[in-house]
Length: 427
Image (tube, rainbow, N blue to C red; front, top):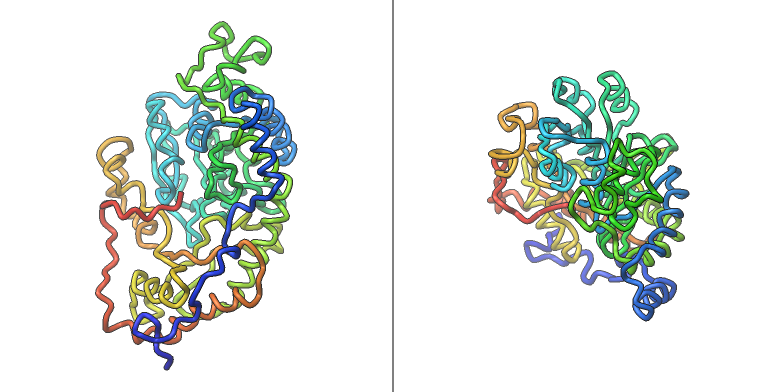
């Protein structure tokens, strides 16, 4: 047995090479674009933003794209676009970042939570029994870059005449069976804040093929574009132009739009490099007990986009019941701090939903699957560097092969009750 670093042994990785994990990748071209905005005071206005929206729509393969201040604003605009009203219900997985569903409260709608499958993704088998006469839409979240089963979800939506919003904040540019995520539902929205795979400072995007939904999104928060020149058929709202229906100034500042234009040019090739690195990492750990990869079979035409918030699944019973917290603690000691318990807390356990803004689903035992599923963060490599990837994988392997050393000192118990504020959030 090899002594683990947590217990006084020698770590596998002693110092993290910063360039290997640096993201986003910024070059002189990004800096020049930003400086043009700064030097010419082009922060406000929409000329740069409109160019980016045109380019993004073409890249996404949709008719319309609209930029907002952030992903939360774009998700709210998507809800307004489909006409979410007081009393409506919207189905969403409980394991996601709050912005996927909290904006529904703004429109007087209620969240109805459903379960996840083994990949932390929306479980289509758990949707239909949650549909009621009040159900308006399904919020699909491509969580930690894993594409949801859109064939099954869209079939359910069609059967019950429901609308579909896709939250693509974790999976910009990702594919499901050869088709880009965000093109299946009626409308899609996504975050491009500084930590995302597609990172442009602080920015959100809404995409759709519907002219009506696009114009309603304009009406929600783009007062300077919500005018007679843009409006065609707005359900009788045309006489109210120039005042945003959402009561918000939702346009993105053009510094972020300028950065986004440059990032878009190189995004696909950079994500392909990330996927090459991540797939090699998981290949090195194939077959080890206690862990499972969250990744797709790319031969199907699907992919993991830019592997945002890369995660693995943890199976404690295969490691003599070792807690995920103790496991991560040991891996961090081997790999210079690179690992931790992963995922978001389950929203239905938070007081906001538990007591205030949801249907009474907290006591639904079927949601326990979402609570009990354990996951952990893994290194997310920006480049393919064979030697370093092998080193980080070796740190995981060392802990797994010597995990029995950790059992005696494992005082962690995994708490699955109501949220107490751990701060461990995948945004």
